[in-house]
Length: 140
Image (cartoon, rainbow, N blue to C red; front, side):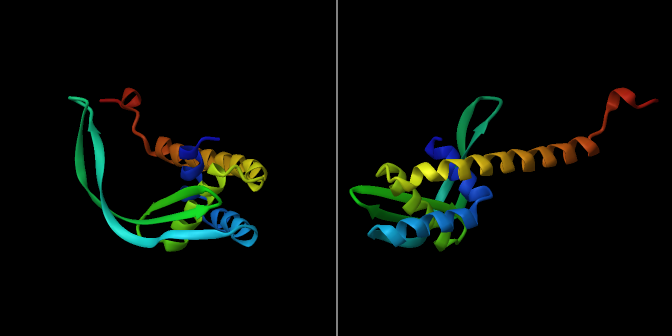
């Protein structure tokens, strides 16, 4: 599983799981906090569909953490103020870069989260479809 998908799953629906995964690493390995959780602002890019060009829509508050596990560095960035999740994501990122044995056991958990996210997205899609207006069935 790639880094982007793993991070998306943990941020969107796996907060508790991320904290448990990070605790596994903290209990077994030395985790150095390179940069403690800190808040900042970042610009959000959006692609304009007509000209297919990028522009900045505005700023958003983020929390960023950097840690080191073994010889590998990890970064955790989340929107809003969530120091615990940011730290957990950084630890998980470093654990994957270090190829720790715990990461193999996490694969099934992440696949379960992926199925759960797909189910939640289907529920939202069905909800939208239920309220959608079908103009071809409307009579004048």
